[in-house]
Length: 366
Image (tube, rainbow, N blue to C red; front, side, top):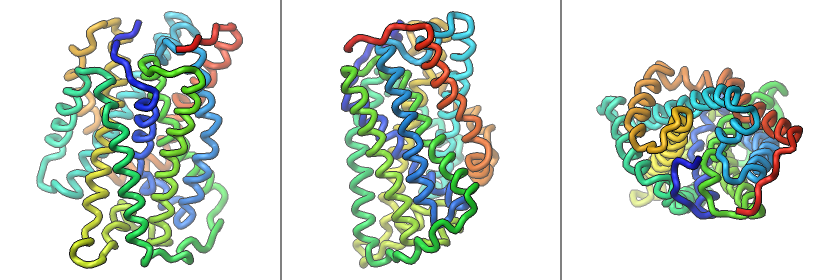
């Protein structure tokens, strides 16, 4: 039963995933104090180890082309166990959305609206997102291609303007950290930006694309988003070197160093605007998926009645998760990747294996 009947193109699906990954640009904050000047290696290895994960998601999309993730659980595990697993994912999606919502509030308050209460920023974000959700997924992802283009443009321009401050010796020494640090950094990258793409298994039935296209769009989204992530970290390391871990937001500090006269100073405002746009887009997707999940569990066909109540819960829940951004960063380094891994890797893999054992039919061309 498809609750939202609206449709999106395969390209919109691809750009939405790309934009979703790009929204994790601040991730260097989490790995900087773990791998220091080798953070780019963690970003690269984290991307590479996630290639099998992308194949797994694509396989589930092909096997069940007209069913979202929760409907797949119902078919694979049965109505009772399937609902139990779905309830776990409901918590996962809402928690993920609430965390990103508070991240956006903290970022806006830190950079441009210091006197505004955090709760006001969160309410404004939810109200704007709620208007998009009422029109369905087609409006949620409509401008994703534009957001991706803007993010790429700012990245390329920033690298060009920082060429005079890039020092290759900032990458040295290489492989100077204990092996456990590289494993930790790889796990953070794999679990937080890339593993979170599991949310798109809730959206793929709305996308008009063939089985062949689904693999191509997934890979393109993965590589475009990974390119942005990797080159953002490379830029920050090349400019800041082993001082990377000294700053709360290395990308913001890097762009503050752009100074080619009065006309090209204060470049960080572009980064602030772009990151606010990307984070808002990610929150809209997570908000939408959370509402769809609740509607599926409650067997409600008209999801619009749930939008504001789920949004209010996300605001309240988000304000109770972490007392400050420092605690959030510590959690992202030490515990969050382990909590997320069952939802992003273990359960989808088990679902795929059980579906194969039960010989559930692969989906036909969409």
